[in-house]
Amino acid sequence: MNFGVDFSTRDFSAPIFTGLNVQILQMDWSAEGGPSQAHIRLTGAGDKLMEPSRLLRCPVMVRDKAGTPVWWGYVEDVIVYLEGAQISVSLAGLFNKVRVRYSFISPNKGISDQAFTESAEDIVSQVEYGVKEITLQRYGIDDDFALNLRDTFLKGAALPKSALSKNKPGKQNQVILKCAGWFKSLAWQSYQNLEGFYANPGPGPGVFNFGQSSAARYPSQVFTPGADGALSYAFFQLRGIGNPTRNLNAQIRDADGNLLATSAPVAVSALSGTAYRWVKFTFPTPYTITGGTTYLLGVTANTVVPSRYFAIRSDENQSYANGYALYFNGSSWCNLPSVTNPGGVPDLIFRAVCIADTGSQIEEIASAGSQFFTRITVPVSSVMTCPYRDNGEGCLKEIQNLMTLGTSNHRRILARVTPERQLEFYEQPDPDTPSVYMDGRGQFWTFQGTPLKAYFPPVGQFARYLGSSRILLPFDKVRMPACFIEGASYYPHSGRLRIRTSA
Image (cartoon, rainbow, N blue to C red):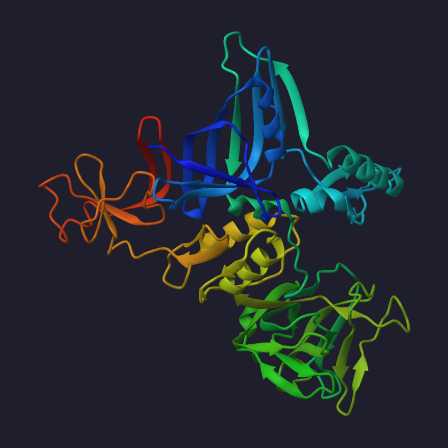
């Protein structure tokens, strides 16, 4: 089977003509992104074989004889085999947005908190190739070391890397293009979202007793979210004093102290009488909080019992920069008292956790990492998790982590990129209703009885084997369940199709 291959300029505005013979060696597809990789050979006059180095990061489109798109992506590596030399250029070592994550080591060998430099960027490289970001990690360095490391690394990495080596004797003069699918470009940028999780983990000295009198009630942390969210959980460090018997609730209030929502009760048995424990409160219906609006998040015992009350851990070091703690004295809201820092304004030790649909999170992360997609569509998953991210992972890794959580139907979320570079996420099909079948000769057929061409493999679909009379459907679907086609590789020279499956 002969295929046509189209190259275009990096901005997709014009075609590129190589004047060389083109042969497809291999094309791969994946259920996570569609076209994943391809190898293409170029041959022709020796004086023209250096020209394909300009194809790096250029779009590639492979078509069959009918002009139907078969595989699409971009050139990731160019390897030129010419006489006795092998010359290669690659995007692997190209980075045009660099920052450094680092920490000091003090004279007593103690490691300080980690810090980040601002990102340094090479705009010319970004315009030409797209934004490729990296965070370097170093320990035991100072600010000046980190800044110089960042700038020097950027200077050497903003352009593609090249390599020279000796070619094997008798090796054909040729160029090999290693291409990647557009889905892989999501790995080029890291993702961070500091909203949705608000916390002061401490440690810090401080305790506030409440529930023993009407003048010491509702210890609450003031915080202001930076974005809208759905508050679902609250955590505080608590203990009981004098064997209290009543339950506790978390409450969220507006800036004036007006009650907005109350959590489900937590039994007093969850508390210790001798040690502080993290106690989790759940709001049965997550409460929608608005970015830029100030709230009070606290705890109540509902009734007052002088000899049986509660203690909550506070932080007199005032570690939480975006708020402070209050309590209600029976007529007004007051700052928590501070013993170690008289006149200070303590915080509570707390956590406030929001949740969001993983589908909406995938869309947000994909949009943040999108440089080449013309459209992004994601289904509602009805699976809820916290959207907070601050681990330095790339957009692709964060998306794949969420895809594995699947939907409320307990099916994975899959992805494909169309020839128009539209990124589409979708729910894995129902394994009980496979859409393709394989006969005893290895030929795939649609449910309607149409044979599938080998270079249009049914990746991302469930398939059943129909090449045996000993399999009787639907009765044998448990003994011989449908298999999921995770990926496929096609080799045009031999016409061979190799599929990768998972249960």
